[in-house]
Length: 105
Image 1 (cartoon, one colour):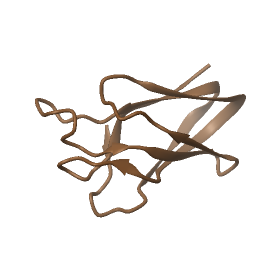
Image 2 (spheres, rainbow, N blue to C red):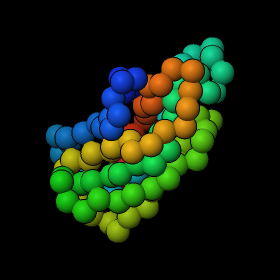
Image 3 (cartoon, rainbow, N blue to C red):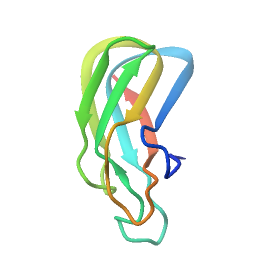
């Protein structure tokens, strides 16, 4: 899991893969603190996704920690993915993040 610092106004995470993968979907699961209400941590709302510094996709995520969310894009070979949180749903702790970040075919 990855959590942004609460003071970071534009947090991001970059993942560099050891081996490239062919993908057309990015699947995200919001981070959740165990044994706390769903709104304990802030959640990513608007995000920007780029692959190896190229074309940026923008998406708005649902306000949930209960399900994974998918972003579909034209199939491509991915070496690196970067997710930047542009805005967030509020939480008691202002640290949005992701429990899972997956690339799928």
